[in-house]
Length: 149
Image 1 (cartoon, rainbow, N blue to C red):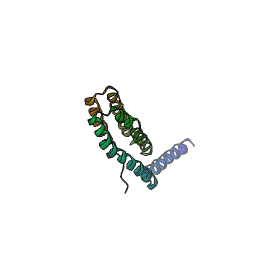
Image 2: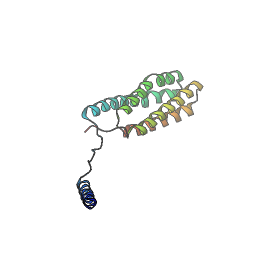
Image 3: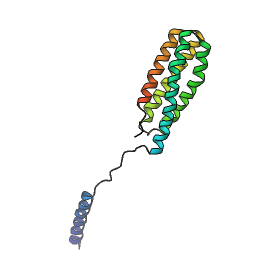
Image 4: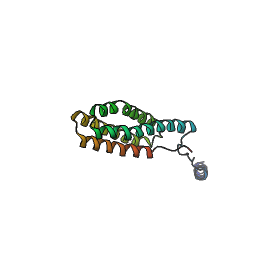
C-alpha cells in the first residue's frame, strides 16, 4: 500500500507540473486613455494654452512697464485659474504620468509666487526670472500632456 501511495504521489506531482508548465500567464494590457478622458484633457489643455498666451502678452508687458499692481493682480487672477486647470488636468492623467506632472505644477506655482513677491518689492530682475522659469516649466508640462488621436 505504501508503494502505491508513493507512485500515486509522483504521478500527481508530474501531472501538476505539466498542467502548470503548459498554462500561459495572463497578459495585462497597459492602461490607456478613453476617448472621454482624452476629450477632458484636451479641454483643460486648450484653456491652459489660452492662459499661457495671455501670460506671454499681458504679464510680459506689465513687467516691462513696471506696473506691479497689474502684475500681482494677474498672478492672483488668471494665473490662479491656470494653476487650477493644471491641477485638474494632472488628476485626469494615468497614474504613472501624474508624479512628473504634479512636480511641474508645483514648480510653476513656486515661480509664480516668486513673480508675486518681486511685484511687491518692485524687483524687475526677479520678476523676469520667475516669469521665464514658470513659462519654461509650463511648456514642459504641456509637452507631457497626451494628444488626442
